[in-house]
Length: 200
Ligand SMILES: [Ca+2]
Image (cartoon, rainbow, N blue to C red; front, side):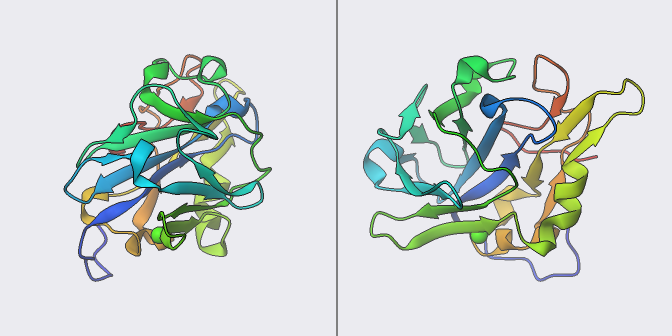
């Protein structure tokens, strides 16, 4: 709960989690999660929404560059995972959590992620490369002193149902996944794909 800032008026569709691996892993272990707070289901195959990642591509289309793996629709109050690289090389316990994917190399550091409306206007943007996110970036990857293995935590939007595409610009609205949130085969990656995070 963020007490120092006025609560935003919730609504819209926006980025709610990012998982990035720099210390180890492959492109299939890199993903973003979207959250739908519009009150209605949105079908990406017809909505015209696009996704862009700074330094790689301005915007990918759903159904072409963004390949549907399971569902095309994000439900109201639902989550939607877009992976980079093929799901079958990902570290997910359950690859059906990956709704869609882009078979593309990923940036060498945390990027700015943008969603565009069909008319090209910005639907949502989060600049994970900005100074505000430096603490979260630096602590999302670490070497575990107990076993000597590199591990990775997602950065997730806290209390996602009470946010909007503007409030999620602020790094203070985000947190690192807890170490009990293992979703991966290897046990080295923590996050909450398709659900709310619970933090450290
Ligand atoms: Ca935003």
